Length: 390
Image (cartoon, rainbow, N blue to C red; front, side, top):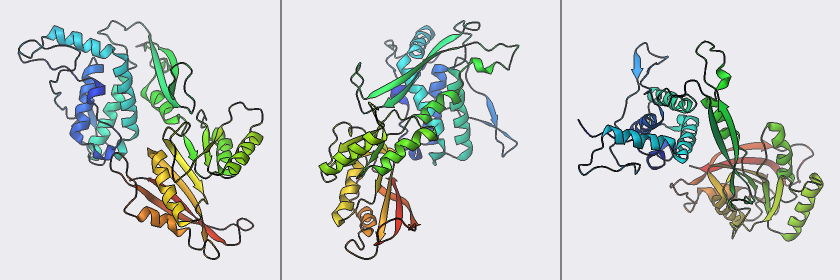
């Protein structure tokens, strides 16, 4: 009998999801098959029917490479008997760190599946369905482990990024934890599905984790303060304070006063003022972590400002973040044509790139009309830019 293959630990085998558009069908199927072998006592070799065709499609199963995972050692001939493999597999399955990593990877996978353009639509849908099934298997009871009649206690952790370090760990990456009991589903009562935590309930909290926002050139703080007031009404919890930055000390002093007047008596207001020099940006706290969103409004008044703004944004924008810039269009006066320097800056060959080689680029733009009674005399309209890594 041939050597038994031991599945690989998720932390060492799952491909990064930073660039879903580069993943191949083989990579995805191998990864899902590996997770299935670890966490699903009964293989998920079920048949799925495509809504577009009458014939049945079976998700291809990729071979699991017989690589030593470190959970068990091979004998002199490089093989493992069934008992050793089973023991090592149980140890791998019980590893809480590997399990949490797998859940996070699967959660991200199903939310970004549409970006996997190298995988045919049918195969991508089948892979997504399989990922959901593996996620749901984390909530199911296992006959092999004799848990048919017992509930299981589960701990969930959702990462939050805060500007202040945890007083316990000293880390800026804190987490909220939820402990709950999944009860066994009664075979005679199929309406009691609320006893278990299904995959969707794991995914949604991940999607709802609050964004980290930095405003560049905040000035009086109007945009940041408006966002801080609006986000709770949009159902976005603000555990991360919005970081409103500016350069001039007098401007920062006024900005802090405006924050205090908007949130009187609040010990930790949802907006934090911070000094930032675009030409020499500091990564000291609270600017030590990437932002999901950057915002800047009417901040360019000299040709070099556009270059500084572009390069500064590249230091703080997260891999999947968006930088929103609203620029006033001025066709006369001292600042005539300055608004054009932003597009010129992003058209230059010197545009910053990220670790994956993506270029910080203008993704799209929209021209807005000037509103009556608003703006200075030299403003004829506005242009809104959406900027990100491409």
